[in-house]
Image 1 (tube, helix red, strand yellow):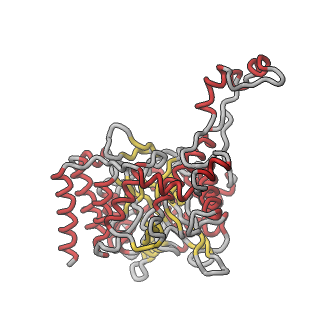
Image 2 (spheres, helix red, strand yellow):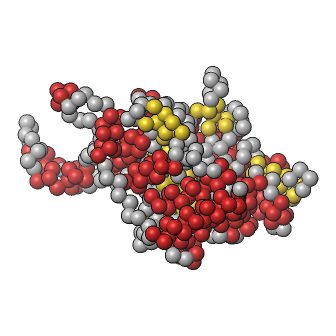
Image 3 (spheres, one colour):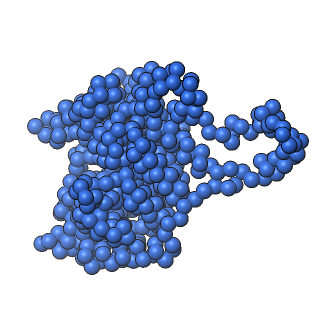
Length: 475
């Protein structure tokens, strides 16, 4: 099989990144602003300075944690009969999380995202066949800030069948999310066997884990949840401007977080994640659509493969605001680079404007991009049948292959059939309104039936009762 693959780092370069990360953890350490994390790590051999909350990790402690982390595991949506098997080298696609703005193509205006908007967007993502996993797309403005994570989880549980990623606000947030998911699954035991959601957590660059994130990591591990651990240093701001330095710092941060999680509960499923990015020195903005971002996603994939862990990162992210040439180029560049590198989960579908804004029509456009890239990843078979020398000889000079049985036998597998891209002649395209891809996507979206089977009425009631309880505690 002729299949494309991208290799960025040599084995020696991966070892040097790893060695540097270990040195950073051992000599510099992480500042962890959570007392229980300090106690847990001190009890397992870390050097803890409680006055400064600085934790220095011996290399053997980190290596032990890496050995404890499973190299593959399966994530499930509502259906427990099939799931998404995460293993190094497999490639899946998802949305990205926590935008605050929605661009409404009908009104041609941007607004703050509401709970109703999030429910609608979640149903759209559920309908996209190329998107296997769902990261909660937005943080609704009309939910309380202290319990927004519960609203995100509740809305998502009700409006998608897919496994989803969501953050949680501390120990209580994890426990509430587990109660909601267990209500859908039927029991906590079933939820452990068939995880319905992944905790999406971050470090604070440079070299810090704040109190809420650390407590959430600890409780998530105790609950047996899969955890995505994601540093996001900004090259030139919260990380070195050199891509290698930014990669080394991010690797140190994620290895430190993995060590905390595995110390609490060895065997906790973790996803090696990095949102390393850079600062645009001309504008002062964070750029996530340029070639540097794509290179760092490839490096993330290769470092995760080096550790034998599944990986995740933003790969369809764009700095552009509109579905224009810049957006198409940035999304395709990121998607192709990360896919060819073997990044396990590629995030970013549906979002623009540095992941601050969701454009609903982009979910359809990105679904199409993913379909094209999947076809590219397949490559093509080279054997006697596909080389088709006998067919070429039979047709001969000046002939035509359209009526050949060989064509009928192979064209569905060999050729990619777009659902959204335009391949019509100019005259037909013009007669149908000369619509660009954004308009075609929006019109198709408006005609779609977004059918997600409802949860049992009592289960949905229980979910919202848990949300209201959290609101009451926060009041």
